[in-house]
Amino acid sequence: MRKVLSGIFLLTAISIALGAFGHGSQWPRHVLPALEGLDPRVVQLLALVWYWVSGAMLALGVLLVWTWWRMGRGERSVAFIPWIVGVFYFVEGICGARYLGAFFLLFVVQAVLLWGTTLALTRVR
Image (cartoon, rainbow, N blue to C red; front, top):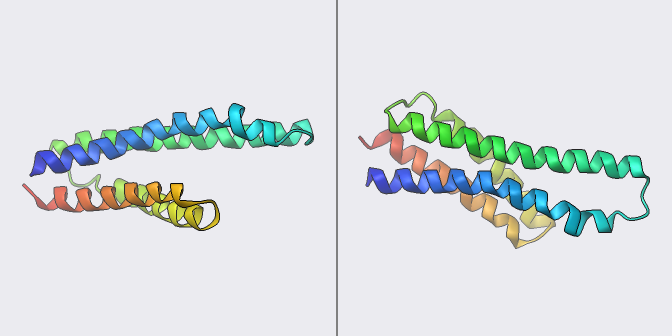
């Protein structure tokens, strides 16, 4: 059971990291064309923020993979990391789903998977 839970945690962490590339790829195809006519400085600022969010998603995913690796070696002191990332993703998922659409419920699923597997992995020996 521990291997299954560990695998689910790792796949969730990787999906968060890979989400950065999906997010970043949306800028040139979908976002930039919608901003046509705006002051170029505003567009540059939005691009900076957009790609910063992509970088943050990648950083959180990498941090979670590192956490998975540490927890796999028996260290439980890092378990707070997936709880914090889970809160961030849960809130973003609820707000995103409410205002932008059901796609953002994926963030809620990722948060719940992080919480559930972290709870189980810190209890299962």
